[in-house]
Image 1 (cartoon, protein in one colour):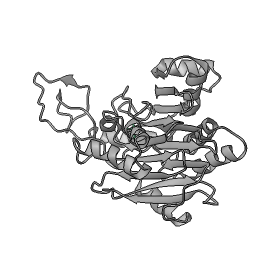
Image 2: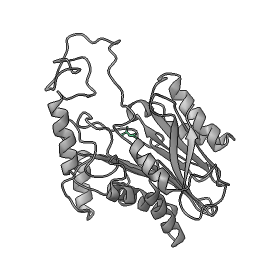
Image 3: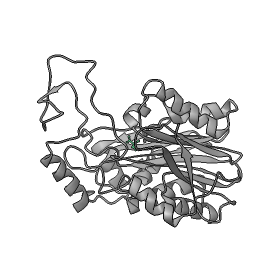
Length: 339
Ligand code: ASP
């Protein structure tokens, strides 16, 4: 993430916390073209759902920092798979896809799940088949870059990985793995670090207070095939309720999804908390159990106020996010100090 932050930081004016105003687009990380795409959708008369879909789709097409869309985060088999969701805060409908293969536009498929089925989430091969039937193009998501990440990992004895209580010893060897006879509860295997992932999480709120939120990611590099993170889970990756506002999260999804931080933040705002305080409460809840988890969250309410919070860990003391509203004449890069 760091390199991207430095480059974008130098290209974009870093503003102090701006004034509340509607409409509003806010998203995780310095993915400013995604913010611009979402803002453009609102300006041309699109709905908040159009804005979130267009914004996240822009990141999928651009691959943002390699952590969204095709050609990033190869799993243990070298394959890139995608997780995404979109939520309509007026109707509380959600569309989500997880472990999606061979389709680049994951957030588009998520929206199709919401609008063309009565389900909430489709996964794996069946989600890809659904996408093809809905007119999305099937193509290989592998690139030279993702192949290279994968072959370097194989050469390095498959380090790091996310296995535990298996043999051969996963801290030194590749699989295939078998379960070890004894399960050592205390065995601490690594959780995701700061560099192996990111997600675009986005909230859009229009003048009338309609709220939508969504996410898109290719998950964790070297994940176990089939792994689904927090990003496509309503209440974890994102949440929207047009009577309150929205929230979206990024970070170690295996830990974060256990706490539904986006739902918690929205409920805090419903109870009267301002967005920054609501975001902090969601992070604090996770910290209580996983002091060193990597993660951040953005929050916004229907009056156009917004905020963010993150957990301070080695290598991650500031979280960057983007905002567009009538006060910013172009997408503005903001930051928050982690605590
Ligand atoms: N939350 C994502 C996941 O765990 C990754 C990230 O946002 O950094 O799949």
